[in-house]
Length: 245
Ligand SMILES: C[S@@+](CC[C@H](N)C(=O)[O-])C[C@H]1O[C@@H](n2cnc3c(N)ncnc32)[C@H](O)[C@@H]1O
Image 1 (tube, rainbow, N blue to C red):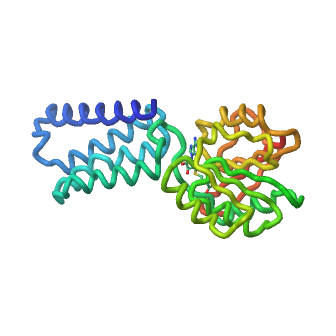
Image 2: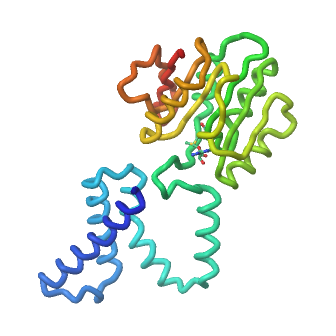
Image 3: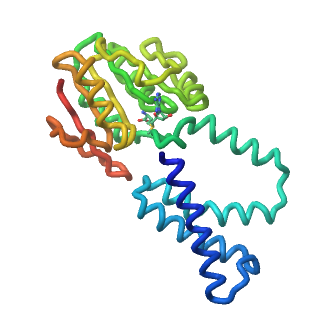
């Protein structure tokens, strides 16, 4: 759906910009970079009208100008293939409108550390662990607790495996977070996207034990009041939304 919206915004923007050129008596192909810039602005506007996620709007803005600039450099086709492969291995299913890779800050990790109950043997899972930096910090600070990371994108998963190196209380697995049972976890941490929060809440309600804690960074569960919230002093101004099961 998100990919279709993106395609529609791009195509419509080109139609509008070319139609505008013709209407004002300009040759559409005479000045390709300004034309691409105009298309980028129009596509970004379309993206906003179609209520696309913020990162799609940013992509629309730069996509066509970037294509025109890249064409000027006459780069070999293998370069584009390599970039595509790299982005695929990092972002994996983001094109389907799911969750992109962006990482919790050090301040968020410290705030989360404060939230972890002091009980030895505590189990915490990060669903969509990214490159595993957050889990590494927590696992180092709490050697008495056990941490698990689940990540499906290949390159972040490899980075997370490296980050887990030497820590016996941190396990990182490649997998789909929706297939991960949550019944054994005391704390479930997520930093995903608003789109997936309703489904995540259903999963948490169905699987998490009474008394366990769901912590969502930045994205609250729609229409569910968190038991408490923690403001994180980082550049993003993140909030941790805490839900006791
Ligand atoms: C916003 S990042 C958060 C990374 C990390 N939890 C942190 O806080 O630093 C979300 C991560 O979830 C991963 N992800 C998205 N959907 C997933 C899925 N269905 N199964 C496993 N991982 C997923 C993405 O690849 C991305 O690395």
